[in-house]
Length: 351
Image (tube, rainbow, N blue to C red; front, side, top):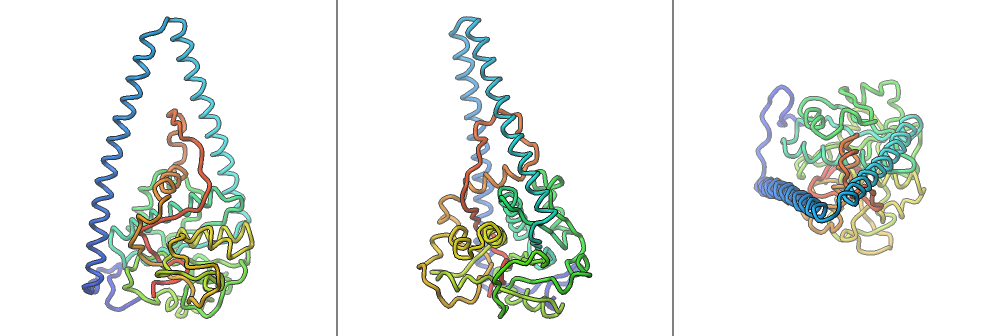
């Protein structure tokens, strides 16, 4: 890549500009606050569980023995029914993912940019990959999801995700060029710098989404990479269907979800409007927008549904965990998967 970038041999990273340093400090403060909230939420749940347990025990104390036994048995039966339903949903999800693996559109996340990112940025990208897997599992027509260049720190952080080792995805330590060396003519890198507009998804092609949290440091890097490798490029036709109010920021999971929506509906406009947040849209008319950019989204609080989406994605990524814990919240919610803070080089890099 760039001569002044840090690589696997330990070369020095480039000195960040003042703007980049400010963005990095803002991200670090956000992550610290996020960690604090996580601890607080964990404690809140612990206290809530203790409160419910106490209420249950007090309720049992004030009733006759026969009624007490009936209530306990009824509660056990209810939990058992929930377990069965959750196992059925999990089974259907696994079947869908297996079908996607056999016949779905090939979507590839290029993880070879990890040497350009900090630990926090790699963690942000890992979270987005978790969302990708979750939304793919909920789709009626899942894609065949690939993670290429999965090695080093990137692989280490991915392995920390709950149930990652059981995911139904293709994990490749090799680059996509090596992994698909006999399919080079079918490789298509999605980048906003491309002059080619993606019209349809070809099941024989491998559509590559660049995974990089670049903070605007590496403009045009995916286009340059594709040109050097001599592979095709394309951009999503966002500008044909909607006008954006602010920066055209898309994260990796938003790009993947848009592609999945298009597979299901065959309608680009519907796919964009279901995935791209309302706050980024100015109107329904077509506008001249040079593709979509994928970088760091600086204003996560505006996604009102983020927390519930995040929890749902996290739950979907856990294989078998919590199946027998009697959790009341077993139903999945429908809707678009939104993420925040973790910008990437999805359909395009962040020019």
